[in-house]
Length: 490
Image 1 (cartoon, rainbow, N blue to C red):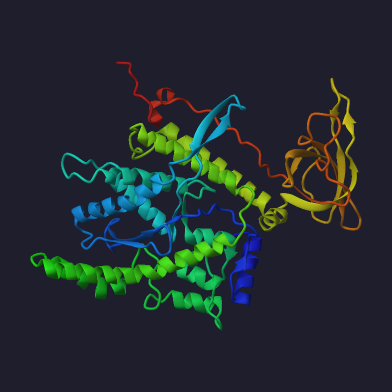
Image 2: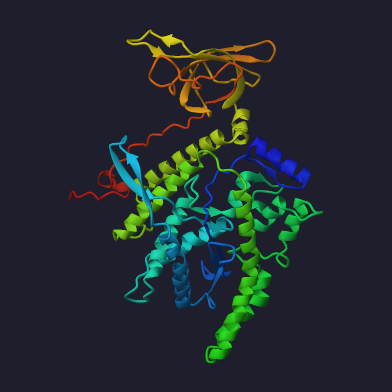
């Protein structure tokens, strides 16, 4: 936990309300997200009990598994869920846009929008990942056939679960993670996994504090859990008798239908409060203006959605049970690069996030006191424009001479540290030489060079392209790392 977030948590306790730790929204929020609130049967491995799903507050559709231990009913639930999810995905596949590639020499096409799934908490993401793994290899023929939509559902759920691992992706979001990214509550990180408690801190009832609202939200008799786990008292005293009543009415269609309706009403009562909380959370997030780099990350989600849709249309197979050595290394590198870019982009978009890096000595803010926008360096084979500025700051400047810095206001421009001169009054003067972001001529366009009096933030964090590493092909991978076996015979 950073120093600023720890301070914000302490301020939340003192104020009795969650405190903002962001000035902009760092996640894309769809105009039509699909909210999915799942419930699973306790004591069973990923046995779906029910789900409330829909793309609008008044479009909730309840899916129920009356006997979660029954294999056929589980896959019937999967087919019902596919009947909701797959048409939602297809609704984003009508319009494409051209994207220039290879420096404008070619184009590719991607969908202009992409689907977004919202679940209450990270456990909901885990549920979808496991449910996708249990369905994507099923077959509509042979032993134990399933509906043809079931394996397709599993592949798409796996796609969304993999996107959820990508830092900065918004294809599949846990509402607790999205809210606590932007607000700090006065409770622990573990307690922040409970959606009713988080929203209790964000919107405590009149006359009560966030701590009191969160304490009330943690009482399952007053507020049902946000799933997919259920309350043990509910399981033992209400759910188990309802399932037994349904199972025992196998020979009486009327009694069975009545028991099914009662079970549906029971689980709806558990899901409906979380459904309302999810849309309250959407409203809180939508009130924040999006960060400048959110659209770029969402473009990456749209690229991924387009690529996987084309893979499915071309008859491509499901995702493997586990990655090979090269695929695993590539995935790890991709996630590490995305995590680095995600941290930098958030700092560039949000001064509150950048403040954490200023405390860590990775950035400083100062005022431009001198500027020479016309300076030309003619020491090389041809003259180049190299303006210099002097920035005076009261913050520590641990960057050495020769270090390269960037400014979020001008991300395409590099600033090389030329001199660092500490002053006796606690101020430090930093002379920087600028390059890039000023065109190719010997005259800097207006606004491309910071002017005297401008306050500027300079950081060692770079928003530039991160090159990938070199990995062997699967055929060249040693057998010790999953490559082809040695073909030489003794």
